[in-house]
Length: 265
Image: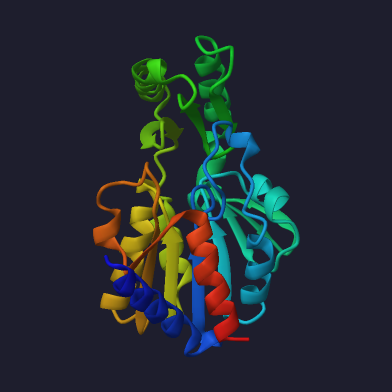
C-alpha cells in the first residue's frame, strides 16, 4: 500500500467510526497493538499516549474495549481508570461493575491449569512459564530461541495428558482449555447492536476477531465493519490481506486513534 493509499484508508476507517459515534464500537488488542512487544511479558506497558486517547474515545463512542489474551487483572493494572471495557483471557475474564468474572465454562479447568503450570516449570525452573489462572499457561522462548522445539514438545505432551489444547503464539505456545472462547467469539458478541464495528490487532490470535467483524457485516448484524492491522516484524503474513488498513506499529495506531478522537471531539 502506497503512502497515499494508506492515508486514504486511514481516513476511511476514521470516517466510518466517526459518522455516528454513539452507534460505533471499537475493540483493540493489547500486546503489539497498544503496547510494544518486549522480551519480558511482565514488563509490557501501553504507549504513554494510549490511556489519554482511549479515555477520549471511551467517552464518545458507544463502546470501547481492550480484548487480550492477558489476564484481566494485568490489563486493569496497565490501563488504570480509563473508561473502557477490559476483557482478558480472549474473552474468558471480565471486570463488570468492579467485580472480577470468570466464564463459568472455564471454572472446571482452574485446577487443571495449575497442574499444567507445575509440570511445565519442572523442566523450565529458570523462567519462561507464564501462568494465567483460569485461562491458560504460556511457554515463552523469546529470550531462549534454542528452546523453541523443547517448549512446543512439552506443551503438546502436557496438553495431551491433561486435556488442554496447545495454541501457537508469538514466540511462545499456550495451553488453554478446550472451550470455544477466542477473540472471534468475544468480538462477535461485543459488536451486537451497533451500526459500525472496528477491531485493531497485530497477531495470529487476532485473525478470528477480524473474521468476526467481517461475518457480522455479511450477516447484516452491523452496517459496516473496519479492520486495522498493526504491522511488526512478527505479524502473520496474512495480516495485510485481512484488514482495511495497516498502521506502523503501536505508534501508528495511536496516530489513527488520535485522528478519530479529534474527528468526534
